[in-house]
Length: 453
Ligand code: FAD
Image 1 (cartoon, protein in one colour):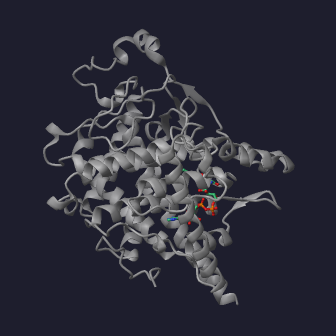
Image 2: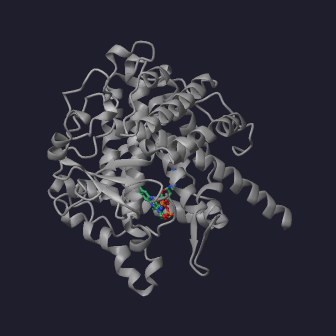
Image 3: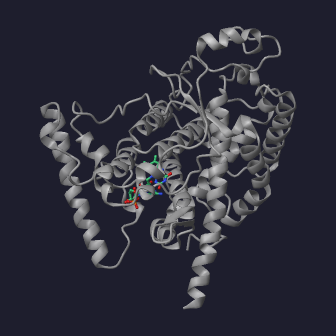
């Protein structure tokens, strides 16, 4: 059973218990960094000013209006506080982007990009024009939009159950898996795909092909259900099983598993109005699918390795929050975390990837597909989910950039790592770490339930 603590997280040499041990040792540092410092608890992103670039009337893949409106239409009947719209709202103070004028007024205290003083680091710049580097795995969040983003408090807006559900959320997940995960066409959601609205005959044919795959998949799921078996994620067929493609899929699936864990752990009981763990939710979404939990562990190994690789970079990093003593503490804590990560056993080895000459071009493809996943976050129809979805895709994007584009021993040629990338990376590790702890607690609850029976 893959939930056996001794089971290895395939593609890494570690067992669950090794990773649980590492997590127990590192989580206090991670927790204080993400919860007590301004630098890591405020995140800048563009939440509202971007439109979903994938489905519109023109693309014909989804009657976007149905995807977006579905949840809200059905919500009129439930009390206001339980509506996804209410639960998914952002809370707490949120500062607008200072803008160029304000930056100029602040003078040399907060220099503009390109005017860095000698001791001024990347994070002292109020990011104004995020230039996309070709080595980025994510698109900078405010690139190409009119708004310049907002600073959002991550502490005031915890990742938890929001009630975001229905066709809209499924469409996003399906698109992530279907369009971006290298495996053969995966069925879309019934009713969403409107073949007649595809923009041209080729688009219509593609939509029809997809519909027939959908029907077959529906038939297989029904068969699996009638036999009592769970339609497992392994039923998704990969075009081939090369390491890089598997890694890509596992990262996405592990991120999905982490989001599911958080919403099950901090769930709103709609009959009592109380928040707390929902064991049934965990059993339905994770426990029955050991490979999803394995992918969560895998992601911990991947992101931890990226943080470890940044040890040298962070030693020379200037933290700028406007409060010198807090900056000193933040730096100490960040260095401490990176040093602990670097001292832990190396369980994910990125040097094994993109080595084979037969997969030339794959890295480029890998990067582009990951950028697509980050673009898809603009299609998420709930503010809070979009916030955490964007942060985590940016975090994994930063991890991939560090893993595949950074030389940990020679810092001179490394691409710049923006403040938002660093904040996203550390908070993403924080999310996975929290999911591992929650998942362990859930497993104990499952055992306790078994013993009661
Ligand atoms: P979904 O989670 O929607 O999954 C769709 C399908 O994907 C499943 O039927 C299954 O076939 C497959 N699948 C599920 N998990 C995995 C996995 N780990 N690996 C591989 N395949 C898998 N809701 C909240 O309450 N709070 C949030 O913060 C939140 N954030 C979200 C962020 C994003 C980016 C998105 C797209 C959605 C978010 N949601 C959030 C919605 C939530 O993820 C679910 O979509 C929703 O709860 C409906 O769940 P579901 O059980 O129908 O299946």
